[in-house]
Length: 118
Image (cartoon, rainbow, N blue to C red; front, top):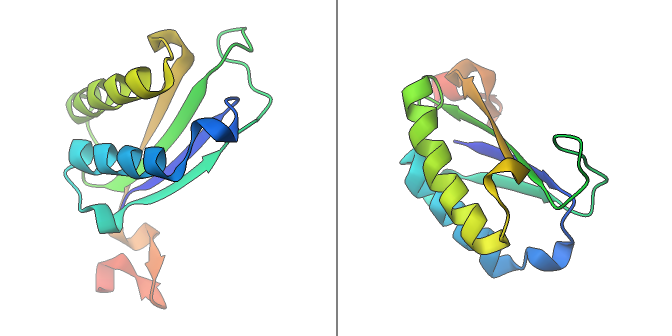
């Protein structure tokens, strides 16, 4: 059950529903998780600065169980996600950041309990 939060200074018009669906599909494939388990929030039009510049940029926080817990896995995920974002949004490598956070099943509440018991 990955949780993806995106913050960007790009306008909302850059994120139509079909792009969100393609992003979700790309993330699910990269993480080898079912699409119906993906949770995605995109916040646009934010005042942002990366590396001292307010040029268009994109920051993603990605939390998941069992797939973001090693450098090797995150290197593979990063390559796939960067390829998609660069192609879809026209951003360069230096304008995209991804923060990976590993989760444990007991850290996610669902259906009145936690994932450990579902």
